[in-house]
Length: 458
Image (tube, rainbow, N blue to C red; front, side, top):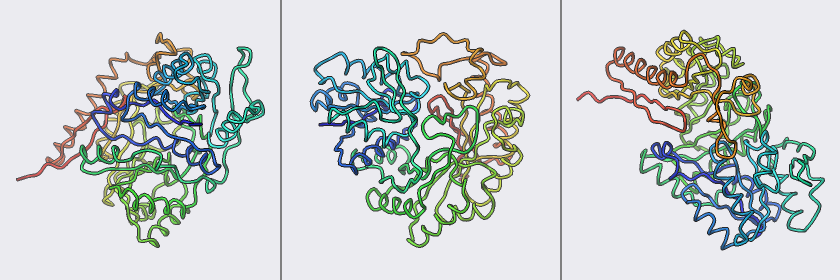
């Protein structure tokens, strides 16, 4: 084996996600795999989701790949570092070249290199991985490959920035055949009576929310042609026949022209797979909502993050909270489920802001909502603003940005209480208003997901 692509997310170790049981396949790795395959670089993907660190190492030991490329993010960082150290320090694994890519490495270059990575792929990984893999396998020169970081004489070397792929139609479909999708579909079906598969139609985000990381795709907007997206949906339906699609794009309706083209293609192929997506309130209107409904959209997540305009402005969200409420209500009336996101503990937030958030949830009445306590991701504007206010004492190799705490208006325990308070008050309001709704919530990562269900009156 020449090239092994893998990650270090293990579902059985994630108690909160295991409680929800809505895992998705590693789409980014599958894009890298297909891109390499298209350029005659054979590779294998070890999907760790339903596996274990022991099985992962046994697989590497058995197959002795020359290159091990590992996707890295906040959730998997600690496991990735452990895997790197094993591969670098134990000859039983063949001492492969270790390459890391993903959103967490861009602003932690020196740390990851000193932790054991031979190379870091900065930004979009497809073309950089192709050039780097070719050079390694042919004993070629890696010095002139754009988008890399590596150590030379213990000093960090960064090559020129890799230009982003402008025309996403050049990307082949993700190599879903490289992994077994059956466990994903089965576990969804078992726990939720339906299953779901992820699809990406765009890269980058043109907006400037201070807490959001744009480390990989940048602050841009590039999109695959609607025709190609619908062809992918047709392939997925024919191959896997999922009950739903989850579009992972940051703002699905950012281009109304694209949405019209997408719906036209859906109708032309007489293809209808229920789907959900994320967008912003100002990118929805009656026409777009009707188009989405016709195409099969059953749920739209509409970002707000707070019910306080003061906090929304501090986040640089550039949206009016009254507009968000109006659009959620409008979407509900169209018969499409709604979701919204709440972030507590943002710098400057006080009890009055939290009270406004509670009122926002009562007025908007989304079908589902998530509550997250703010944490600063390195490289974001939020991190830069609060860096001098960090109060947590963490060791980089055994902690993540999610554990960073900073001076807030109230203590961390207060926000844990605030989460429960919000859910309880919104729950009581809904029961009082309608008498036939209930609210249930589960932990997801460091978020709480609340959903509305109908009580059957017998």
